[in-house]
Image (cartoon, rainbow, N blue to C red; front, side):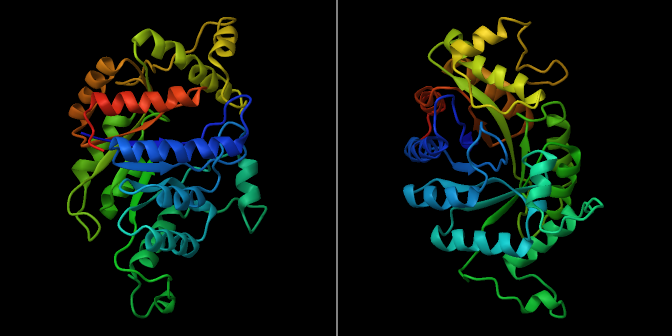
Length: 337
C-alpha cells in the first residue's frame, strides 16, 4: 500500500505563519526521503490556524526541493477561479516539474462565506449559480486541448506548452463528487477526515459507476484520513488533544492557531471531551496510535475499500511530533525512499 501526505500547513500557538510554511517544506523533503508517494497542499482562507491560501506557490517551492515525490493541490477550490487561469498555473507547474504534478480540485469554499464573497470579482446581489460541473469540464478541455474546432476557446493557447499534462483529481466528501468523478472517468480523492459517514458508500458508488475515459481506463481512488502516530498508543492519544480541541473550536467558528497539548487538555477538561471518533461512521475521523496499531487499522480500511493508496493529514502542536508521526508510519509500512 502506498502512503501520501496532505499538508494543511498548520500554525501552532506562538508560531509565525512563515514558520508553518518552512515546516511544510521540511516535511515535504522528509516525505520524499521516506518514500511517500505524493504530497498535496490544501487551500484555506481566512484562518489563523492554517497558512496556505495559495497552494500553487508552495507546490512550486516543494517541487524544487524534492526529487521523486508527486506534488500537487489538495486542492484548488475551483469555484473561486477561472478554469483558464488554473490551467495556466498548473501547466506552468507541470513544465517546471514534469511528470510529478497533480491538480486536485474541489468545490468547497475553503473559508467562510465572507472570504468567498471577497474572492469573487463580480459581487452581485444574487448568489452565483453552482456551475462547478461546467467549470470542471472547461478546465479539462483547457488542460488537454480538447475543445471542439468550432468552439471559440479552441483558439486559446494555454502556455507553457509541454508534453503531457498534470493529472486532474476530483476531490470531495459526498456522493455527488463520487458520481461526478465516475461519470468523467477521473481519479477520485475522498476527504474522510472531513466527512467520514459516507466514505464506503462514496468509494463503492465511484467504482461501480466508473466510465473509462482518456484520463483513466479504470477507477483510481484515494481516501484522506486524519492520523496521529507516536511510539505508544498512550502518547499518540495525548498528542491528539490538540486536534480534538481544534475540532471543537471549529464548530464554534473559532479559527485560532493549534493549541499546545497542555492547554488543550486543560480546556478539554472543563467539559466532556469531544471525540475524534464519529459514532455514525464505520471508521474514525482520526486514526490514533502506535505504529503497530495503525498498521493494522489502516491496512484494514484499505482492504475493505480496495485502496492501493491512503493519504494522511496530521494536526499536532509540535512540528517535531508531526515529522516523527510520518517517520513512524513510513517505517511501519516499509516505504522505500
